[in-house]
Image: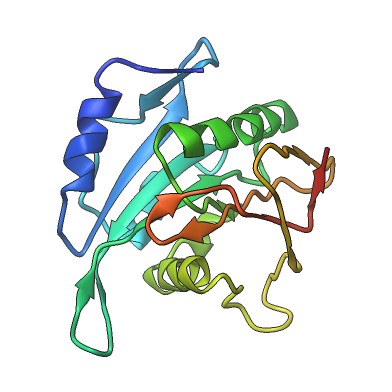
Length: 190
């Protein structure tokens, strides 16, 4: 898998953004092997506004930079990557994007990629909960709120295959460094 022309430059600029929220939307080019930016670059837009503008029939990778004010007064701008795979999308496209998510995570050094299947669930509150689940290693959802089940540990060198039923991919977080350290129970170790 290749990264398209100009994507790394947009990525570098995006990583320096310190606004309330910004999104970098990535997609596969027509060759289905090259990652390209969907649009002209990153967008300074709220999660709710981006959800209104996005197609609910095409998968995408969305990397968010959001301002989170902590209780102790510090301000953070974490990166929160999402793999958007709408239920209304055809199965071939879902599987194609799903199979490339690990490579996207590695290429952009992303720690934990959160699965999203409904744009209505892309809210600031949801992004904050996703960030908290990344840094704490725990699912921040309560019982019956879409929890994917317990995470299993993966050691370096192990790979994960997607089940035929679900396409959620989750990676761990290790002090700001990207490491593959956990996979939801809907993935099978190979």
